[in-house]
Length: 259
Image (cartoon, rainbow, N blue to C red; front, side):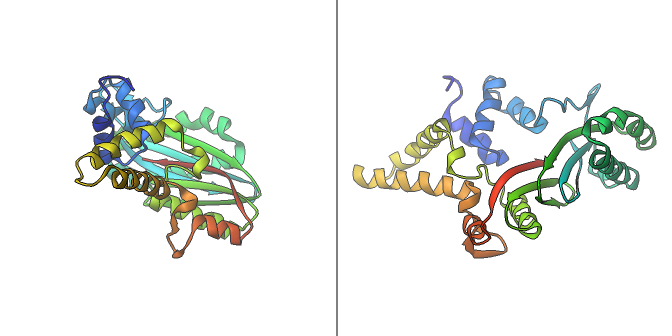
């Protein structure tokens, strides 16, 4: 970690945004430790969303998911204000773009998007930009959109469409950073170790107790951030992992996006 990117800065940005430790670290590195710049970087989310028309930033918008038996697409459309994101012309445009991506393919939709977007820009007076687009192929697909702002597509091997939808809903609510333990990198563990070491250091306990406290904090943190270990939102008696086991299902792919 760069000398100027301290664990305290990473923790502060994580607490402020709720995004993953690694995303916070990368944003702080890109911003050379400047917290305001790092926050702005995190809002961009992906490189194809430069999202500016002069100084008019498109920081609001909406998400839609469209599905067939074998394909699901997530399309995000960005605008300047929540007012326009709820405008009927804007929501109709987003729905049409989703339908086009599902029926004709993402590339064809992208090619025709500008001609569809420009009249709505003229009508609303706001900058509107096409945002994140994801396509998932599979035989068991489920999607969930929360408040038109967050969308998740889940593809399962085995299980049912209803189960895939339930897991997609769970992910939008609980926002896990990892699907399972295999996704947790040694670097992420090291960062959290440093953060929790500082918390434990001030505790007036023997070193052996401090060590166990540290291990407990790290274990609890990553369990809470890992999808398969999270209590299922509709029935907390089961974890998502147990739910998948019962259905003899596995997660093949997850696509998610939040405005």
